[in-house]
Length: 191
Image (tube, rainbow, N blue to C red; front, top):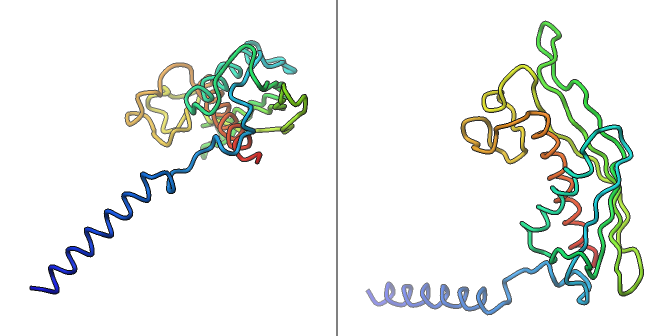
């Protein structure tokens, strides 16, 4: 009985030590420490469109901005401490999978973007990089029942309330969301 009491006290003390360590700040990881301390905000002007795809500049700029807002790494501002400039270099819409009858079942919508992250105060380019990603869609089935993860969130059809609307547009959004997440990862790992 005496050994059980000692073990119980040891476990409680261990749990309390871990709790204190985690919540004292030692165990909390922050992205903001890897960004230069004077950069608190980012401006994201309308991306340039070097493709024939109508409306893609607005859609891509909006999606990149939305991902930045969701991640809350930097404040979005018209006059930011930094500027993220982008240019849409390519859009490809190609067959991706085929049936046994050689009919196209899925298409792959690819987007290629070039970005530059600029430090306004230091007047220097922090990142220059090209990104490419894709999303899949089908023309033959309804988005809500096509068996494809159209928006890239790991959920399919009835398990995903976001899978509605235009299939091609969802594929574009999935591609741009992946690119936006890569941009954010590169920004926070710059230092």
